[in-house]
Length: 434
Image 1 (cartoon, rainbow, N blue to C red):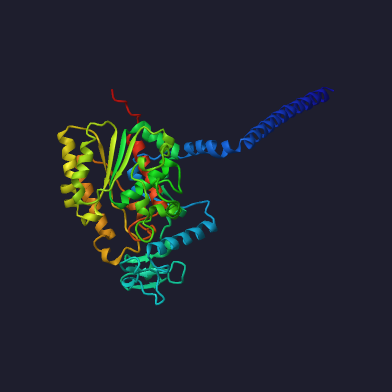
Image 2 (cartoon, rainbow, N blue to C red):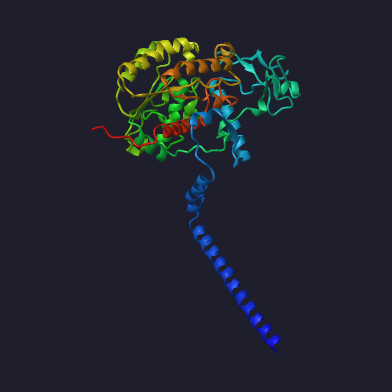
């Protein structure tokens, strides 16, 4: 009898325990259902702000942006569709044709390199022949001047595997360390510059102008027409839209349709008319403009939180001694003599050249020459503590539409990295002058 009573009590205890656990399980199931139902009704919040905040915790933001840039790499976009690849290929061909370059860049006889040029009369100068990345022989052994697919054609020090050429519009540039660059929307771009800098000026050549165009696109939140002047006619406006904002010369002449400052854009278009920073581009790309560059710096002496970014060299033979002593040193001496911290001078390096660099310029503007120039300029500038914004690694092995200039993808990435650099350089809001 006692055994029976004890067993009965034990049975009741087990039933009570099971009921309690069942209630807890039911409670958690209901809680999960409520959360999922709430987020399903607020789907945009889940996919946008919530996921972005979650990603912030999973990945740390990059520090020492310029070092991360030098060690970064291009990674194919995870959401890439076959239609994206097809559209990019069609756009590249269209740009080549408008620029006066051949539609097909390889030869039927499988010869390649600068000793077997492709005629480009509308471009003006011959370019080296490439190998077909979609064909059976996608690699060029430049020593043997032939296309092939064997190891000696694809993996030697003087070989180019054209299957590996990066289309920046189909990739994203990421640090190899695993940290994450900040992505600046138009609103965040305008907020950053309005809060941190009093003025930003870019001085330099066409490479700098393309960085400027990308910044204009961010300022205006307009990828299609963002950098085009307000008084361009409708036909030219459509012709120079999108990718064409970065295409120089040729039949388009679109480089002459882009704005150099906010006054050349429709009123109120820059940062919705709410910006509190000055911004301009000055195309002082050769030694004859050195004194004008010096004047711009003189005008910003003691102007707190003013920034002038300078990038020149191609029009001066990539001669570091000439560029430093004739162009930059007077600027740095002026600042020193004035005992002025401002403007902050930033040096913009020369980026890599592409596979179809015109043959007459392969030696004088080739990557070996560019690397030496960038290294020498860095050495000259180190004693003056001038920060160097280095985009060579960003561009090496990337598709260039004419061998010198890059398109939408590279330049928009340059702009994002430049904003990351400014964000790191100016961590605090600017103080208003008395």
